[in-house]
Image (cartoon, rainbow, N blue to C red; front, side):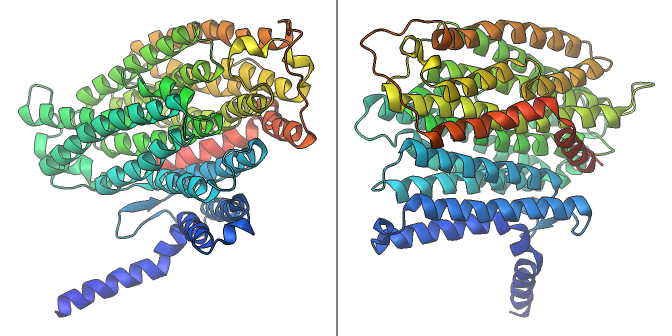
Length: 537
């Protein structure tokens, strides 16, 4: 009994003396959800608009996440595991949580302007939106395989409902059903991989996995060893779940249908937020094996990095080629999302290849090259937040004016809604990677990391060429939308467009950061570089 009392006291002490501070942003969202539900229960949501409650809670969350990142950057607080090591408070988690909180504020503002959801459904919608964001923040800080799985499922379940939130629309219901079916299959495979991996290694803690793996297979264990093959199989099964969240080939089937069936607001949220959280979790998982000084099975993990690069190349190429034949703007942007997941996956591939090499490559600075890989990924995620949300926001706001999301119905609207269409120009040119927009620097840093990684494995140079060619290919289908907006002739009986000033200002609010990040990228690249350096120490 005394042992149980001591355990309970330690748990309470750990929770109250540090863990609650570290969990501050998630806790703020939890409180906001409770307030939303209580207001709904008391019918007070008719007096206090649900979006106002959600927006205030999100702003508080953004403040807490930003202050934590500043505290870490200044050294006032140190990285530390919390909640008995289940989650990790560090620079990567603070960076991604800050991005998610900022993105949440922008998405809620978009829903206010677009009118989806209405006041009747507002509490339900914002509860789902905030709940999914909590799961994504936990994905960014997961430090144990149990939390790994719980965070992904906490993100996925609200996402399924949000995709089918437009009641009475058959495409929306079908999209949600497909999303659930594919998600359940991916979750089952991932859970089996987690159980196999933790059972074989005897631990679910990410920081302990590499040392336990060295004991199981030996420091030079190769693919010919039975234990090594089992571990590799388990890792691949875990990666299936992450590949589903990232919508990389061949786990992309849900993405175009889900984005077309969902509202543009939900599609924009899923296209950015889930990517940021899933990439943070993918990096944590892979660094558990290749991020230390002693790397078990270096040849195997080098091969795994190359395999990730192959998947990235196929994903980029498929996403760009499939986008050519699309007539619906949301489906086009869905395939664009798949392609951009491939670009970001290239940075992860280079990171794994570089770290797996260790000190085996003479005259090669592994630390500098690995920092550049992670820096490129983090900077790309920051720019991607604005440029992809901007594109989906324009689709949502134009939908409210012309009641269509088909490219042919965009003919001639560029001169009737110049603010919205100018935002689309900036976002799409940035998605291509043209200067002077932020997407140019994002791709440039990733391509530079691939060039450096080519000194470790020649396939990284092949991946660089594939990425460069796909950048050129992607220009043509993005130009289709802009051509319709500014060159296509608007039919005489088409409904005229009248864009209110707040909507135009919101579009500019998203377009200006994309331009500023292209002209003045230094602050963001320095921040990403600092986060990457401290994570890889």
